[in-house]
Image (cartoon, rainbow, N blue to C red; front, side, top):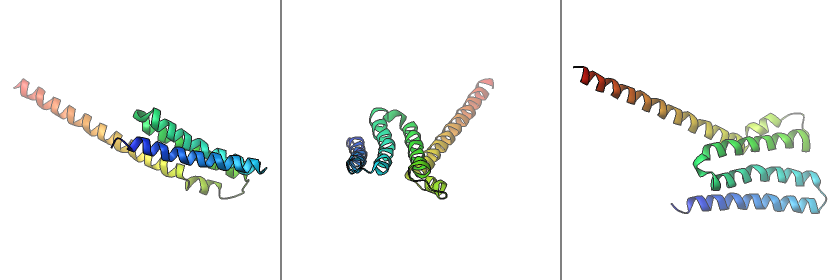
Length: 135
């Protein structure tokens, strides 16, 4: 229970470090496009790991930011670094950021539903309380 956050952050940080090492290796070999592509992969992972560590209380916002960065990274690769005529939108829809976005939207919708039901229950209790005092 106490190790979940450090282990999760360590694993995502290791992933970011691997992407950074790949970027440096590609740059050392003179492959600037591959290096830039790897650096674009570092950004969403870094957003998620630092956000999870420092802003755990705002994890849903961190998930949205990381998902947006990942989708933007895929779009940048598809339109700028490795220009494609087709398939960019499909790549954006099937990337990890899209899955994280769907998960975050589902959590947000569930949270909104719970809050709505709780407010409705409080209003019903308040009506019953007022009715009991009116008798």
